[in-house]
Length: 288
Image (cartoon, rainbow, N blue to C red; front, side, top):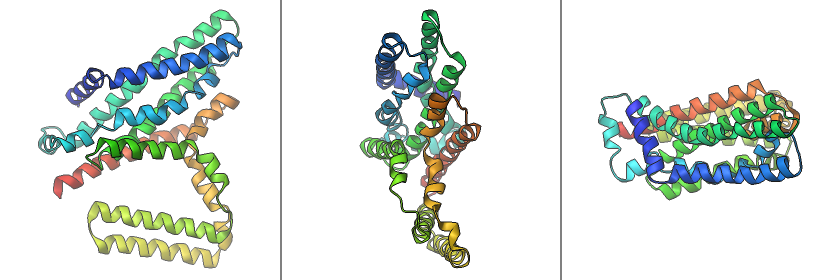
């Protein structure tokens, strides 16, 4: 794993992708820092950092798009299948290299609250917690991007698909406000999720019987619950999908100085899930 990690980290800076990501994120945050903290005298660096979330929409796809799609296009992914180390170590090495690139600007950000403190009042606890959660959010996005990169050999497709999903997550609160709250719409949403699960099961196993059984069982259970207790589905889409507003965990710190421990656990769970899905995606190609 260490060898993969060193190779990947070196490649990010040899290709200038890592340098561009780090420089642009620091420069973008520095502009907000000068405007809000230095010029306007606002004492919270966490508020300034919230303006940099939009950089992740382009920056994260930039560093994840080549993680596996390039290997697949150049046929060097065959080395992954025959490597003397286990596949999860290869995936972990690549992921930790991405996390390191994301961590570099966040380490530099730790200096900014100290600059604020040297000029007057500062809230170091809130600022440093927000920097840590900002880093974790970047790692969540990187795990999603890495998984999407493992599904295609085109870096362009990997970039666009990751950018699209991150954009949807960025606009998630606005999207939720447009969702209907009736029971029938809640049932429709559940059926769509069941169909998506069955489709993914078919993609991973290639077995129509298993995926069809999963879809049929899930749909039958959803309909039975709707017949017996239709009130369960009222506002279900908003409640169910509301947890996917990942940036809310970060903004709760920046806006209200509240640390959502369950949100941090959600971040770590999503990272683990998408790293696992990446491993399964590569395993599928190994045996297909």
